[in-house]
Figure 1: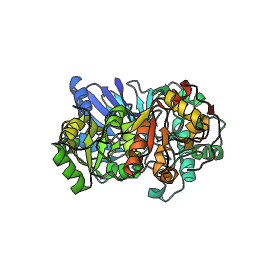
Figure 2 (figure 1 turned 90 degrees about the vertical axis):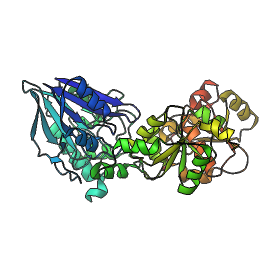
Figure 3 (figure 1 turned 180 degrees about the vertical axis):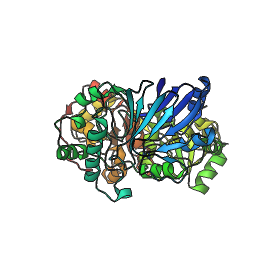
Figure 4 (figure 1 turned 45 degrees about the vertical axis):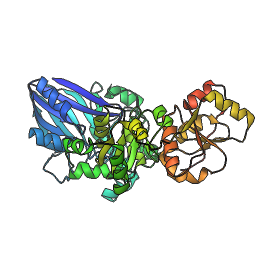
Length: 470
């Protein structure tokens, strides 16, 4: 028996490859299927089943494409109703992979079809669970995503999740290994550990939601406390996972079209395409296509695209580092953004050589900013980190305008004087600056290095519990 976790850091997502006696099961595959096909070929093995723990909201799974390529059936737990052919398994149903067994444990609560897969080894011993979004390390799945689809409250779902955990998961032996669908950084939970594999016994000790003396009422209160609104793209990804989508090869073929500046500009104007610049933030600051939006590949690229671009069907034109076009299109497709129609061939150098103007973002060091603050205590400073980060520490007098909800705060940014913007390290503040400039707000200066550089420069910071509810 061989179990491999295939972890994608940008999405904080874990897919799984399980092989026994030349037969393979894949659990929660990503959109691009080649890694699974290649891995099975290396083992001279056959992909027999594709298991889905639920209809994912934060990424588009590769189940539909992988099933077409291999003939392996897609398996869901009870209550699933996909638009494509799939095995809707019964609670307790068993599937053989070589000399091991995968048992369906229906564990609703995160969603009503959510299912945990229990792996029993060749001796029939419970070895591991693949818990999807039912159980994370340090947390459990948020119970607010399936409310509308099931005409049910988040409190009702949390209660159902409590029962699932107590009746199906916690009775398992402590040495059972937990393989979750996500780790720290995912918007599917709020308190995940940085580790991606653990034992159930340790989770019973460490995970607040698995306390042995926890009542149902306490569980519901704690699991639903502090939930932020889910990203806008979540229901759109659920729809794609439930109804199907284009194969990744078709998406790549449409998107990897190199355009000269004239073609690029014409496409942007005629199709209403959004120009997405995925280079490093320093390159964007030094020169970019006017009104383009920066979201760099070097950060949490796909989740930020999903959080900030409302429509997954939005036509996109890319400005990329040379040779990174396919990577950008692939990572966009992971969160359902299949509308890339081309990229700027030759990048900003070709744009400038064609006689077209480049826009810039002024960026200063924290030391320079310290001098400016010393000269004018009324300097306008905008912090685009999360509310929790701001609450822990922030510059005295800084206004919180979280990047996730920046459109709600556009009125905070005046047209008079200069506005200084920062985040934790410089990535999010450049995204914010690009969005603000695209809205016609140009009196912006980015503080390079963000809050880390600000603290290192000796600028005074304040502890404060923010009362904002946005």
